Structures are given as structure tokens and as C-alpha cells.
Amino acid sequence: MNKVEHIGIAVKDIVSANKTYEALLGVAPYKSETVESEAVTTSFFQCGETKIELLEATREDSAIAKSIVKRGEGVHHIAFSVEDIEAEIARLSELGFTVLNERPKRGADNKWVAFLHPKSAHGVLVELCQEIRE
Ligand code: ZN
Image 1 (cartoon, rainbow, N blue to C red):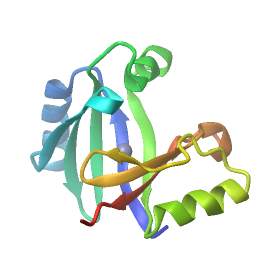
Image 2 (cartoon, rainbow, N blue to C red):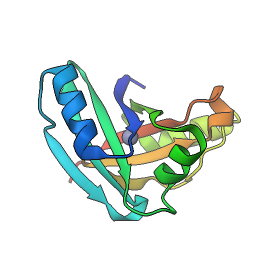
Image 3 (cartoon, protein in one colour):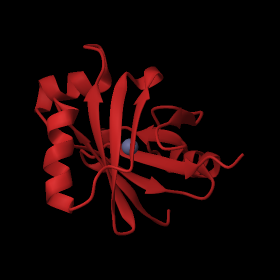
């Protein structure tokens, strides 16, 4: 793992959250994207080397909607960039981490992603992400 790629924040209303984070960070989001498979709309802000990803559910059965019902808005996951996501999934599974998707899936912002169960990381949902090069 080479850096914290982004921090994901679950929000109820991405239009209002975009304004808040634009004021906070002093930059507009550089990208907005809906990921149908995850039932989320996302927006990304660059903040130095890392990014802030805001996530709003597009359906009530979305993981983000469930998380907001359970815990309210707030930090949802921390994403680490990796060079070889398949090798990292294998390495972490071997070490006993619970990987939620054994095969990388296509996430937002042109990335392959995989998640580790929060029980494996002291309550933090960890995302592994690798830039899609093709
Ligand atoms: Zn993320």
C-alpha cells in the first residue's frame, strides 16, 4: 500500500455536501459520477495528494443508505492505493482479513476496488484501489 488514496464520506444530500466541502477545501469537485452497481452518486475533491469522496445513495437498499440509517452521515471508508490489487487481496486473505469481494470490482474514479470487512480492521471499512490501466 503506498498512500491513503481517498477518504469516503457518506452524505444524505450530495448537492448540499458539495457546497460544504467546496467551501471547506477551497476547490470544486473535479468529478461527479454515479456507480449503478453500488447504487451511489459520488463526487471527488482533490486535497493535496489525497482525495475526498462524497457518497450519496441512489436507492434505499444501497450500502450507503443503510450505513446512514445505522450510523448517520460521516466517514464511511478509508481507501489505500495498491500496485497490484489481486496480490493484495491474496496477501490479506492469507493473513486472516475478511475480504468482502474476492474479485476486484469496477469502482468510481477509474479504479479497481475491493473492501475489507470493518471487523478485520478495528471498525474501519478499508477499500483497496488500483488505477485501471487499459
Ligand atoms: Zn471509495
